[in-house]
Length: 311
Image 1 (cartoon, rainbow, N blue to C red):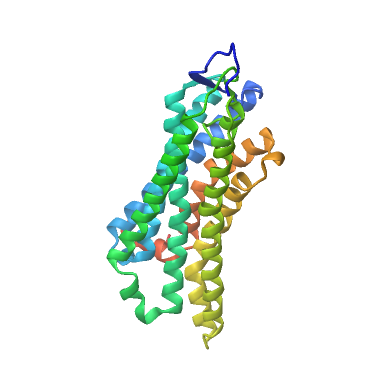
Image 2 (cartoon, rainbow, N blue to C red):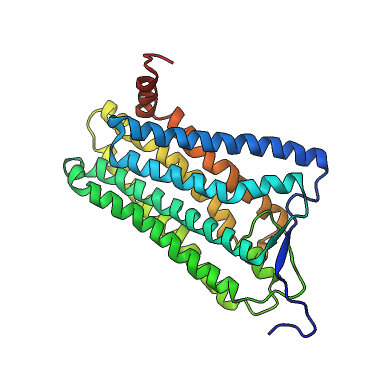
C-alpha cells in the first residue's frame, strides 16, 4: 500500500559520484572515458577482424563477435550517462527513461552471460568430440544458440521491467547509484516488493548460477579430455584454445556474482557502486584485451590485415 498524503515520483535523481570533490570526479571522468573508448574501439576491431579474415569464420569466433557486439551495446547503455553525471552531478532521469535503461541493461547483461555459456559449450565439443565438431556446431546451431541467448535476455528484461513499472514511488526519488538498477529502485518503492524480490532471486539463479554450473561442468570434462592426450604439446595446445575464454568467464561471473548474488542485508551503497563500476566499465574491456593479447589466431589475423609478419 502507498502512503497517504504522498507525492508520486515521476522522475529520479542519480546520486552517482556527487559525494566526491570535483577534482576526483574529473579524474574519474578521464579514466572512465579512456576505458570506454578503448572498449568501443577494441570490440569494433575484433568484430571487423573476424568479419574480414576467413580463417576466423568458425563457431568460436562467431560467438566472440556476438559477445563483442553485446558488450558494446551494454557499455553504450550505461557509461555515457555515467560520464555525464561525473561532469554534471545531481542529474535527473524520467521514470520512462529509467525503465528504458534498465531494459537494455538487463537484456545485454543476460545475453553476455549466456553467450559465455555457449562459448564454453563450443570449447567442450571442440576438445571432447573433435571428429563431430563441424556437425554439432554447424551454422544453424550457432545461430540458434546466439539468438537463444538474446531471446532469454529480452524475456527476463521484459518481465523484470514490467514488474518494476507496477511499483509506486512516493517520496523517495534519489537513486544511490549511477544507473537504473533493480535493487536501488526496490528500496525507493513505497509499495510491497516481495514479488520483485522473489523474481530477482529466481532470475539470478537462472542467469548466473545455472550458466556457471554449465561452464564448470564443461571445463571439468575438457580438463579430463586434455589429461588423456598422450603428448604434452597436444594437451598444452588444446588448453590454450580455452585460456582466453576461461579468463573472461572467471572475471565476468566473479564480478556479476558479487553484484547480484550478495544477500540484500549485506548490501551497502558504496560497495555496490564500486563493484558495479568494475562490472560495467572494466569487464567489457576485458573481452578485446584478453582475446587480442592471449589469442594467437587473432594476432595472426591482425598481422595478415596489416600485411606484416611481425609486430
